[in-house]
Image 1 (tube, rainbow, N blue to C red):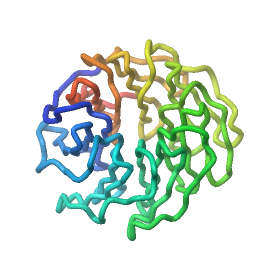
Image 2 (cartoon, rainbow, N blue to C red; image 1 turned 30 degrees about the vertical axis):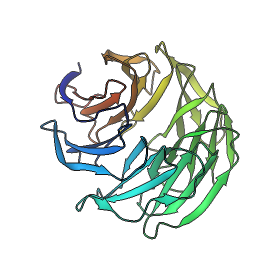
Image 3 (cartoon, helix red, strand yellow; image 1 turned 30 degrees about the horizontal axis):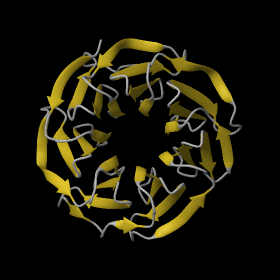
Image 4 (spheres, rainbow, N blue to C red; image 1 turned 135 degrees about the vertical axis):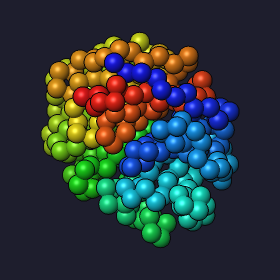
Length: 296
């Protein structure tokens, strides 16, 4: 049974991005109010001042594996890498994309950063220098989500062209109606995607073949998904004002539906699997706990 333990207020517009620090004690959120905010996951309180530097609303946030950096991407077509301790920009905003930056993610070793954009490309950046390492072209519409594989050797991208790109082995999976989110299983064998068609699907990362049946239950488009660190369950957020959990073994919904007062745009699971954070159109960040135990 999941229990709402904190409703964290501070943003003044939609919350579009959320990520846990790897220590599990802090959460960072990005909003259409152009600011990032950090929160104490135990107390539900703000940590420090807002991080401001984008010239438009934020779509995505990510935390580096060592918890020393935050990356953000937004409407202004740029990415910013922030130093957590000083709460300052590491570089000037990173400029390469010609469209809004919808998704950002760090590689497992933290040396690279990937971004997906409305300009239909994925860009890979060097996090130490802020330089572009590669521009990946092949999608025919917006790139809405990017995720590195657990070994860091491959990169998955989800697009509104209804496909999932897997870069390095150059595999394209014909997915489902505009694919909003994509994550890897911890063993790197499977890719999980979420879509406007209200479903979640599982794919063999090597062959691109669908595995099992879709997860069905949402009544409006799915905006975001996250997978637990050991891979036993996923969480999805939707415009239907709910967050739902799904078993990666049975593909069935587990537990109760978690309700917001409006559409839910982002969701994240803590590294130890006991906490879940969600945010959306109601401007609040909700923090849920599963009876002090793992949700799996």
